[in-house]
Image 1 (tube, one colour):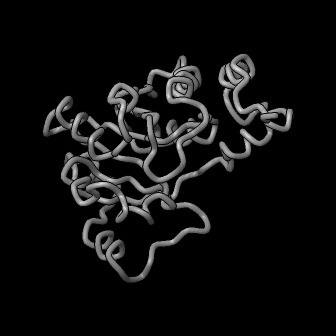
Image 2 (cartoon, one colour):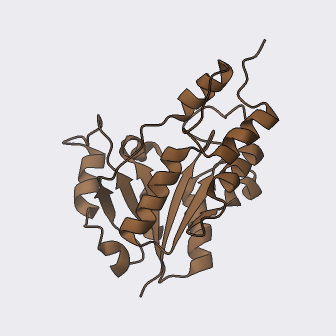
Length: 214
């Protein structure tokens, strides 16, 4: 059987139960051998977080502790430059070889901006794109992305048949949890219990992250 690796990137500012439940659901439903959570160092499509990447990676590490199917991948921190998905996929392809199936996971909201990504046309040479459909978002009927999606779309079974080259969409349960909400609640001195792992919640308190500034 072809090995199947999934890559879920993000700022994880902080990582929460929505991220982790999605990752676990994908492992269980699609049958990934590994799910790699990749905290970005310097994001390209949003402002750089106030919390540095080392702390954000530590929260991911705490959040997935005890779950061997989820792994924290710090390669974008080690790289130390702006985080581009194409560079991460090039590294992973070199490490896992030409036959391994790689899938870059993204929400439909992010996918709608794909044509603005750095070297976006190279992504399918390196991996599949696994798009998680989200309520309130839909693909355009015409245009560059619509044509790209129609040309490359395939059922999820393709992930076991080819190492790269397809766009597959999944409508999968997502917990309605927002990192923005967690930061706001923390700044207001309100509880974030049950929104994120208790280990992460304790770390945020100990490090006094997301506190309101004077």
